[in-house]
Image (tube, rainbow over all chains, first blue to last red; front, side, top):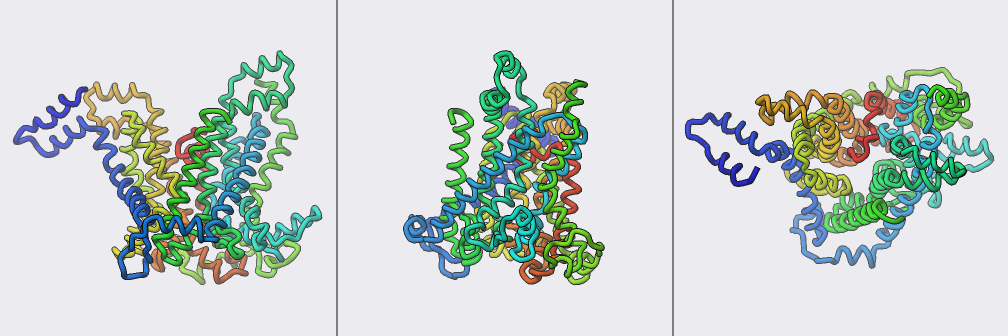
Length: 312
Length: 273
């Protein structure tokens, strides 16, 4: 319908018409506006306000506890982060290390499990409901149990690795082990998601390529590398996209289990920003760190979206 | 089909399934078992596997702490944010799906990428100024930041599955846009609404970061209560795991009803798994 006609109909409000009738007529002619307006307004207020606030504050120096107004400092905060702040550089490195390790672990494990599970068996529903428990369980509770299991003197993990002649380790209390130990927790939580996504992808694969590969005498390994994996690529990349975004932002588990320690050995960018903003109340500097963190998330997302569209 | 089934169900399959499940089940099982042990059993090394279960830890959690208040707070915030998100999100996602306004949807997805602290810091400062820290209002609003995009995205997928012909038929029969939404589309996506509501409830129930800052003494939710126990009861594993079990059990139970939709929910509707 051309816009002119629509506008004319609305403006033709006849005097004496009941407001309710006028309202329902308005809904009739602007369904998208009326239906999406409440949600859009709330999203705008809840989410767009913080974005502008953060952008504004990232160019200012301000402590939440101070009585003075924010002072404009230009790009000083960013300069400080990249040139003077040792803790920031450490946080960037740890964020990338944790993300790379955790996503790689859960991707390989998740896809492998999906290939193993891609067969008919009875009790699929039961299996699925148990398998997805790590994803929905409360993160604080997960962190607590893993802390208990990782306990250097009494924990069951040292007992279990001891059975195969390894350890004892200090796990999250050890500077060298803390990031891998946290990546294991994240992997435990999220491997099921990758498996379920991959299983859904496997279910949609066409049969023809496999039939012709069989005729040509291809080995199962060749079929996996040449057919299954390329066909699954879009699915896997989407899974990877979600997981890497969330890994870059992982907070609950790290904060509860180590609070960034020992020392700063597990202080990822998200945890560091939390401390700067909500512990030291340095809102200006925290805001600029947030801009950097968001840029990092956006960068990784764009790379993965590119990967999904084109060449590896 | 018959032959395939036979090979698929060999004993090896079930051995394999067990081998896969055990590592994923173990931490939760360990949590539950520890909550039934005495302090002596919990600090024994090597760990005790066979013991006489006791409910003492649970009794202690409820008598030594206002645990019912924490549970009530969690319930109010989760139900409040879920209800509001559905009220606002259902019409929105219907319109986005029916009139193909994916631009709006994409803008909302960007919100999924932004780090939570980015929302938390501005709202913390504003709520402090408005003296709204430690109120249900502030908690529900911050939890809505997660719940509303979730509802919008997941429900777009469900509304897209409603055949457009049904809506058009209703429109031809004289249904208004609003009536078509309320009487035709909504009843058809009822299972989707239930699944989305459960997901949104779980997200709010599990939320740690927002509640840690926005909740105070009066509105403290369960995750924050357990986190606080952790700081001053570090060694009392029985009590801690009992509290952890109490938080986790409701979400695990709820998740049983949505296992078909969980992938859709966790990927914001990007994948229909």
